[in-house]
Length: 217
Image (cartoon, rainbow, N blue to C red; front, side, top):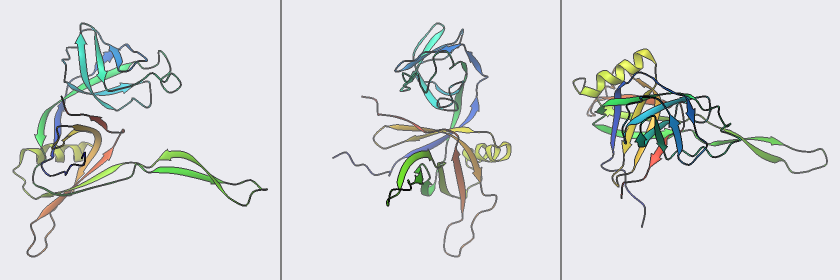
């Protein structure tokens, strides 16, 4: 049986980024290999990629097989040269750090990511047809107990204020991890409902599709 409950999941937000490290090339490979002189990154570092490849741009990845001047983007497959035009993937990466747990979560919901379609039909047909187009934006809504003294609150409020994306890490009970690069906002005042705890709502609006890694074996 592979089904798991979310109970025990840990959600964290990164409070800081390193300075951008120039990437001069990214290979069409699985996993992709980035070339970056004196990058200073180590295996397991969490990075956000800025790339000429739109599908890779703003995506979170982990560093693997770090070497002098190169490193792998763990789990990132760029072999499709139609999407990832050869030689066009250069850009930069920033490492995320300073993780703070978003604790006392009472509820979490997600929306979006649904496939959209265009509907059309030919004059001679009695039935319409559909073709897939884009997917709707993904967002998550997280309800937390109001506790302004928790360390993560200042990080989330700073993200709400500057409106710059942050990296979030969701560790599931089975050890698998999901990374998000998202715009983060939080309600400025808690709910006030008699006989219920005061809560605030954190909203994550994803800047790129999440990256998921299986539990280490």
